[in-house]
Image (cartoon, rainbow over all chains, first blue to last red; front, side):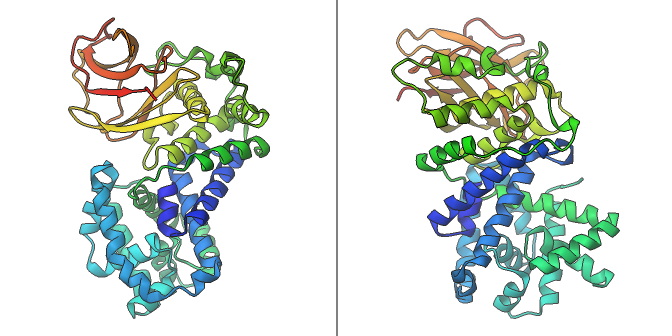
Length: 152
Length: 290
């Protein structure tokens, strides 16, 4: 969880703050959690991602982020995912599935998910219309779902 | 939004790339279309896998300590329905369980009482610890949160789905939360000979240990994995329970018996039913020495 949050928030102090926030929220709402709705892990990571993205967008530095940095960091971000393949099987699955995407789908998903950029920011970064970004995100996510065999 | 717009937004929604207003509009559309809701669920589950692929980061001790202190001061919400709360009796270890449970887990007192008189828990830590396992349902999810925080990445898998027998999992989640909430919790991540990864977590003060395993190959029915506490000075191995790993899914196995600081936590393949002493070479050996 901290790994994911830190990925989105480069600032360590901020990522610890968000981790703490998410952890306490999990603690507070745990008794309400209905285990039949899905694995707790999924719930936790979804919440962690949402909070980290909120934080990125809320902070002034988030608005002022140099969009060019996003592009420059993109390849590095993806390489980091690849480097950790040895550690967990999930990495291998994700890497393999990511390899099945088109370059454009991969860029859009990496920027949005790991970079915390909104679809309109991604559109600006990649110089394409918002509708195109939405299509790429959806097609890419569907491809990932199918590659990784995610079913309800 | 037109129907096409809604469908187009499902990918962006799953990875939190919509603005707050757009996300609200999409959620309204979800309520009206089961088909769209299914797609959104599946893509959200896919997004979770992307999250699991990030490199785990070991949280600093200061973060763990401040979290534990805050847990003591944060009240939990009431359960939403009777089903969401597990009666305390369900925490009793089940005889059929493959996961060994600690006898002390149903009550927080022994943990505190076992502490040497010279090393009292701070009131805040004691309160935090008792909260960890006096709320039966919360503890199951809290254990998952603890695993997520302390071990990183893709943990829990089948251990927390409702189609597994819940009693043994509740009990072991409680034990696991107990280990993670111990002041002196330590963990080591290693590869298992023959396949798979294991994170061994233990607390010298409480003498409790667990193995969080992933990707361990299934064994033929006449074999089993067995864990051991191997005494640091005498080399004598004490059985710490047998278990069945969850394959690709990550599962935890709380070890039975009491570990002494300095023991090596080992794992061997034994004939079905387990042995009284190891009969094969360890496929995993982690020393708990400081």
